[in-house]
Length: 233
Image (tube, rainbow, N blue to C red; front, side, top):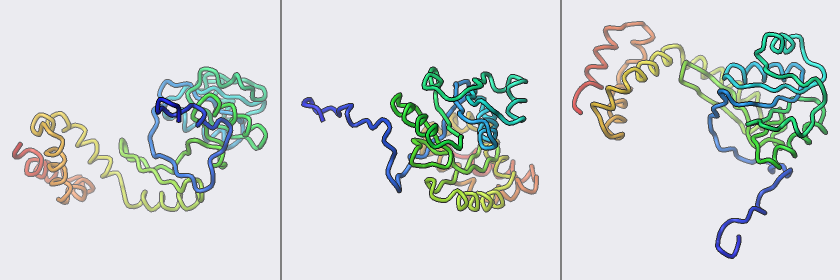
């Protein structure tokens, strides 16, 4: 700490991996339109590229050799830029985050060290000690996203739990979230404060609305909406 009570920048730890058992602050990141660096050209890199593109990231790919699927992504313009050579520190220029997906430990460590020095988000696949963010196992139902992570300790366990969530939370939950999205404006008008809006939605959740959505019983859903959300205020 400095003499004026502020925290010194010397507390930054460029290049120093987090220790074992490190906990990660859970957060969802918006990569839409942001340039993301992907180092690697194999199967794992192909999967990571697909995930980034699903979320509208601008992908810069660095690898001397890439899979046929990545070649197609480059050819059709989905991957905006391919630097067909080994990684260099300047590849990080202008990027929001970086994912290293190579089988070369020295390259992965170089990416981590360079990214840390720039205070960038960095993930080295399957090496939690060389990550300042990790990618959880995800279940998606429209706008509803459920993330499961073991902090890198056991991706297999995370995937097992994800499969259970997929069975437990079906398409009716996507319909519920979409319904509440459509009603959001009306709810804000009827219930100006957050506490009353929360209580109204809690009333709805105490009903069998999810079961009615699963059965596509629109009349029953409309009745539940009237009885629980569109009263009082």
